[in-house]
Image 1 (cartoon, one colour):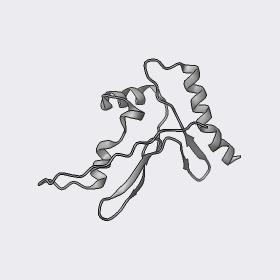
Image 2: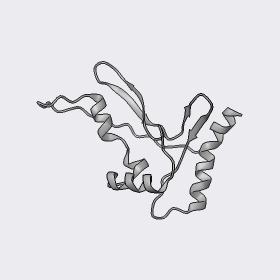
Image 3: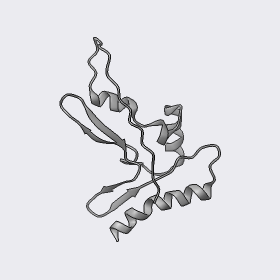
Length: 120
């Protein structure tokens, strides 16, 4: 199994005349540079042109937000999407300049293994 490190990040909004809510902040933070790349817009264009699939809910924010705007969120690095006739599972890895394709594929397969096992 592949383990991921996690970092707690906290913050507070500065008072402003503009109304800002938690969902507006989520929209600004997604997609994360960790799963998309930078600059974000150019990276998204390259992903859409080259991947050949819709990422669906992969790498989207997952967690909770309460009425006061407090919450905890993570990134859905391994997830599934259920429809009437199928379950589509998602996993991937971060491709960087020094990435070796065979190792990245092996990492992706390792991430898929627990989900496939649970579905068998």
